[in-house]
Image 1 (tube, helix red, strand yellow):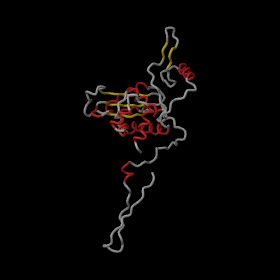
Image 2 (cartoon, helix red, strand yellow):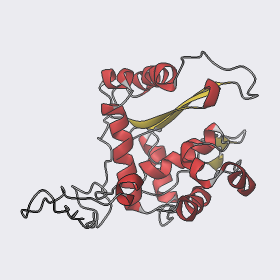
Image 3 (tube, one colour):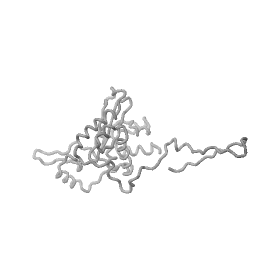
Image 4 (tube, helix red, strand yellow):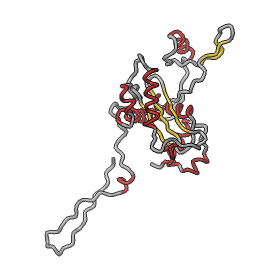
Amino acid sequence: MQPQHHAFPSRRRISLPTWRRESAAKIGFQALALGASCTRIDELTRAFSAFARNGSLEEPVYLRRVRDRAGQVVEDNTAVSDPMGPPDVRLDRMVALAGQSTKTVIPPRAAWLTSQLLRRVVTKGHAPALRSTGLLVAGKTGTSSATMDTWFVGYTSRSMITTWIGDDRRERPLGYKDAAFMLNVPMAARFLWETTAGQPLRDIPWERPAGVRANDTGGNLRTTMEAGKPKTRPRRVSARGSGAKARPATGRLSRA
């Protein structure tokens, strides 16, 4: 796979406004997957919502509702899935949004598979604080160079969370041995433990896209080094005597 052909369009569709095309030319397309370009908390949270929602973006809400002095609703941004919203308000919002479709920015299968990986970060990776809560959470940590920033972006079936610790002027690094799984993951675990108490959470990913098999793991792809190195069988020794030269037998690469 050529990163310059795939990473750039996906990055533009997810839309991170602080990213600029010239930055990719300076740092290289391959570094985009490692988070080498700048971004903000709200942008990164919005981008991760595409994984949670099978490829569709969820716009962040800063103001749920605006009322005038008479109590009439002037602006309503209430989410239907808002766990803090009263049932009647959520029902009214469902009717208001009926017929509107969300924007799909990445293929649903790609989002589904990525969501599985993010879930395993919590169940099998460096997230012991989250595992100890028993909450159904998926997410990913991140630690920038020189420990200037530490991140954790995660989500449940009902909400998302992004935690960041660092210096936005990039002047004072954190501790030399600090990392996101030591700082941000415990912070996120404590917050989620308090805010999701009593909420019925579903395992992640919770909604399989149409046409995707339940046992779909994305296929078996070799790494670049494995694909470029042909397999060889042991050298055959001729039975005509020790003076005969051995002829190597090369194998063929099979499709993964």
